[in-house]
Image 1 (cartoon, rainbow over the protein chains, first blue to last red):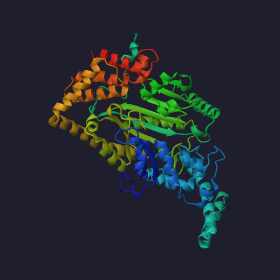
Image 2 (cartoon, rainbow over the protein chains, first blue to last red):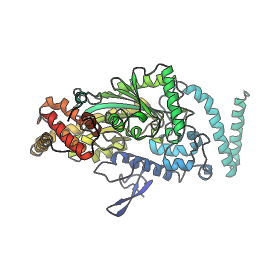
Image 3 (cartoon, rainbow over the protein chains, first blue to last red):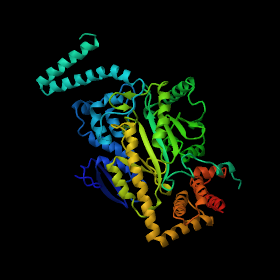
Length: 178
Length: 349
């Protein structure tokens, strides 16, 4: 279904509006949905949703195809702030900075829909380089372990072997072994 | 009724009475959203955690001797009208005003910079300035951000950048805005076309008080919709590329109003002038609409140009919290409308 506003992109956000006791269904693409925040109180437009509601619907609709199976079924919960993945989908807000790591497999799609990009390319804090060197291998290891598990489940043994070698190499580096 | 006369002569950095392109461009604003690593974001924090976060931030600022010349206002101890006044002066967001628990704002003496603590994000700093001066303002707020960065550990991710409570702010945490006065485009119903064009450019138009607010007085804030994948300079350039186009469009429609619709335009301005000078009871929305038409009339040479500073002051003073501050009290809406009518009449005479 095409977006009812731009008639160009695929509609991703669906919502109903009750106006004069009549229900009207709407379908918007992610871009038009995001831009809806500007229309909210504009008399020329009648979309009654807050940007927050639209965002959570956008996040939910994207979550229908979130990538790795584990994120969908296990509903991971942040041990620091208590935010679950389902809650994040519903509220469209993170509970703490650690949620970004926890929900990372899902985030690329969400950021691509919101920003048209998945990677920050601006300023870094002074501790940025230090953090990047320190954090990156650990993040990468966790990611590789997830990928390995997925490859084994899918019986992609060749890929599993490559990932396994990569893991060994990284673990070796962390323990000072080249 | 006794008036608080100090309020009547206030000046605001975001609402100048002289400057380049002032017929269309009013002011510029830059906002940076930052959070601390190892503290839950405001929406997930308990009242005690919010208190701790605020105390930690303010304690570190004090130790570093940052913001010594700023006024610190604790929102939990302010009355509702004082908080609403800060929103009307564009020093805090509506969300911050309506928030719960420990939250505060640091305001520079000249009111050009404010730093909100425990808004949706732990730290939201903004700088306001007259006219179009985005890069200039960014340099100032960027230096302030560097100072803060030395003293509190920012939540930053090597891939996703600065981490914010809402995914729409992640990356740079940057919101760049330019406030326009677009009465002709509004009257001639051209705004829909502009909205559509901006969506494609990943820009948006927000209302007078920012996101989710209406375009009171035909004031619109153009801002970036995205904050990730582009550098701060690129995001600023995205806006700067569009500003002259909007300016030209509004000016062309104004010329057209005078050359092809002189009679009805003149009537529109005269009606606004007569209504506001009558002293009749009026809502803030309606008064801002009429003030907008008078401001248009000034630039179309229908109204004398020396009225501009007063019209600008009135745009601010007719807002509910300002009105209550001027008349030193809290009044129900109907009474406020009556007082507003009287005040406008008095100042326009």
